[in-house]
Amino acid sequence: MTDSVLAIDAGGTVFKYALVDKNGQMLTEVFKMPVESSGTKNDILNCYKNLVDHAKNIADGYITSFSV
Image (cartoon, rainbow, N blue to C red; front, side):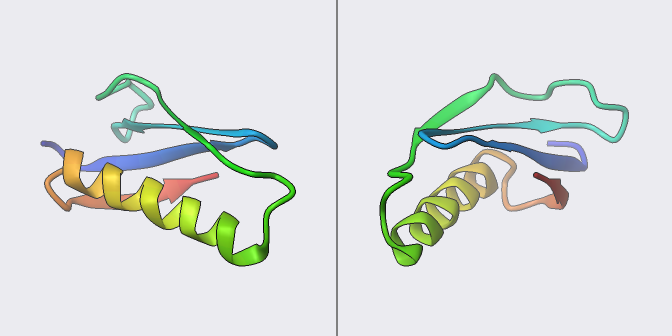
């Protein structure tokens, strides 16, 4: 996959994310990951970790930057 940016929309109940190129063109579909907004700090951090792990897997580990 080409250089990619991990774009994240961190909502209160669902994180949405996709990989885009440097021009903002979508490289993937938009993925959704539920997050427990009333969860602990570690619950929310684990959701971010799982999100990043999934995105890295799709991008073959090559994400040049991210945007939240």
